[in-house]
Length: 324
Image (cartoon, rainbow, N blue to C red; front, side, top):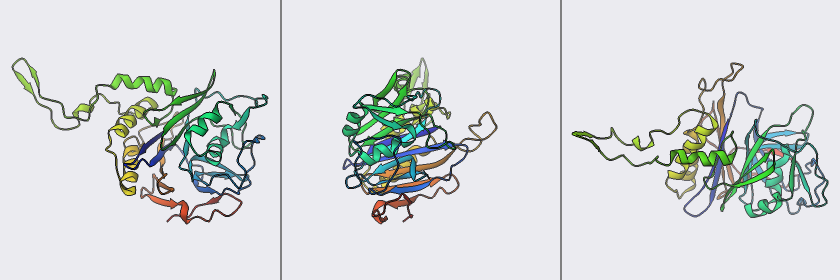
C-alpha cells in the first residue's frame, strides 16, 4: 500500500510526496545521482541525455550494481516521479519492442529514466507515446516489482500504468495516486463521495424536531476510513483538494506531511496473510521550490531535510545524501 500526492504553493511551486507502506524496509536511503554518473541502462537508448545534459536526481531508494533504484525522486528541473504498488493489474511487456523508433525501459529504471532525462511533464508525455516498459529484472536477486507511477511538475500530474491492453497515460486532475484498482476506476469512484464537504452542516428540521450538528467535521460523514487503496485515494483526494494553499516552504512541507498523515498506516491496523503488519515505513516530500528532499520514518517521525544545494554533484557515481 502506498499513497502519493502533489500540489502547488501560492507562487506555483510544486510539492510532491508519498507514503511508502509495507511490512519491511530494503535499506533504502536518500540517494543522489549526479549528471555525470555512469549508470548502466537496461536497453540501448540513443535518445537518453548524455552526462553533459542529464539532470541531477535525488530521492529515496537503494543502489544495486551501480544502478540507483528509486522508489521516488525529483530532479533539478522540478520534475518528480514515484512508483506505487500495483500487484494485480500491472502488465509489462515480456520483451523489448523492436520497432525502429521504440524506446525500451525496464520497470526498475523507470523513475530514474524519467528524472534523469526530462525537464517537464510535456516532455514526458511526448516520450511515453513511444515507450515500452519491459519486465526485465535488475538482477536475479531482485525480482520485477509490479508498479504504476505518478509523474508531476508545476503544471500538473499524470499516472502511467502498464495494463493488459498496453501502456496507459492518465491525466491526473486530483493529483493523488494509491494502489489497486487502476486510476480510471479510482477517479470514477470519487463520484460516490461528491456530497462530502468541509462545511458544518446546517440544522435540519424533522417535523417538530430541530437537529443541530454536534460540531465541525460532520460534513465528511461517509468518507471511508480503512486503509485500502480505494479508501486512501478518496481521503487523500479530499484532504489534498481542501487544504488551503500555502506560501512558505515550511508551511508547504507541513501541508504535505499532514495530508499524507491522514492516510498513514499504524502498526496493527493492516495485517497481511502471513501475519506481518503493514505500516507507513516513511513519508517523503520533494520541494521543487528549493530542490530539497524531506523524509520521516515510522520510528523516527522527525522530518529531515536533504537540500540538493548541499551535495557535491561533480562525481560520476550515485551517493547517499547527507542530511542538513
